[in-house]
Length: 345
Ligand SMILES: NC(=O)c1ccc[n+]([C@@H]2O[C@H](COP(=O)([O-])OP(=O)(O)OC[C@H]3O[C@@H](n4cnc5c(N)ncnc54)[C@H](OP(=O)(O)O)[C@@H]3O)[C@@H](O)[C@H]2O)c1
Image 1 (tube, rainbow, N blue to C red):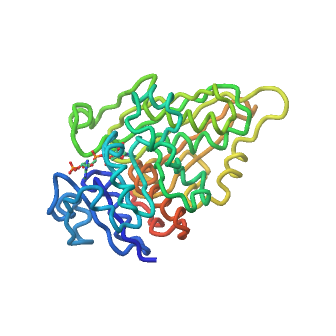
Image 2: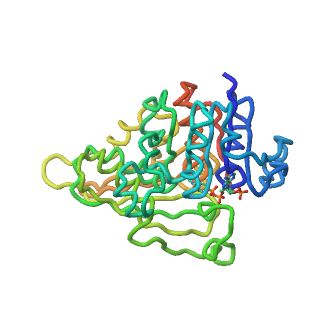
């Protein structure tokens, strides 16, 4: 298979990561990278790490023009922009559309509006499948429109999924810290270097937007429409990665639940989830599509703690989206994604 792929919004951080992975993907023959502000500029001028790999330039095509004749279209646009361009992308008739923004991640529109306001294109939402690749795996085969999960949401859901069948009665707390690349390429008062380096702070307190998709899955998996989970989001003094720790009290009485066993079972044959013997370190996941997870419980079986380390731009964005593309098209799941990270970094 030689795929023609378009990346819309390729000048951003997620777009750059998609280009890095797609340029090295064995089944991808052509990559069209679009940008409004960088049309005509070499990809390597905007994403310097790509300079040795390609002399290609950004195209100033509209999303519809870039999607015509494409097998796969990735939308790597700011929140809300995908809704504006999705109709013209679908009209162009690509085989598969993968959106990396939050526009189509939450199918419960009431839940969506609580966190994002009224949905601008509700008619398009049912078309998309939420593509948590490490959980859904081959269930993604043949899907034609995928919503890639958010970065915090990916880490949180990989921690929650194996716990859903353990009959928890407590509300899990998900304490996460993200690096500055999670905020995109344009500097903001809380993301530029002087505000971010050597600093640490909570944000979106009692209502981070990724809670919408986390809650939707958690309720679906646990079978409890009223189930809750709380994301405690923090900004950290590093560029890449998300480190998330889940803590929850386990049900008392009877036989204690087996938390490590539940994780081993849930991820037994999932190639990009690695269960570690001790708490993972962030830099061991950076640059890779792997989620490093350590799940443990107290000796009395009353308390569980789960640590997850992922790269926000790979596992939390471009890597997971390419994994979802592989699964949807029936390609080997690991194609183009097996690279290790760099350490120290
Ligand atoms: N950063 C992360 O860790 C992360 C993780 C998971 C998901 N996401 C999501 O992925 C999306 C992209 O994130 P990001 O961090 O890469 O944002 P970003 O760095 O701000 O990049 C978005 C890019 O979209 C481009 N763009 C907007 N409209 C366009 C259009 N009509 N045609 C072509 N290009 C267009 C912009 O470039 P031009 O102005 O040049 O067009 C901009 O560079 C967001 O929705 C974000 O929430 C981000």
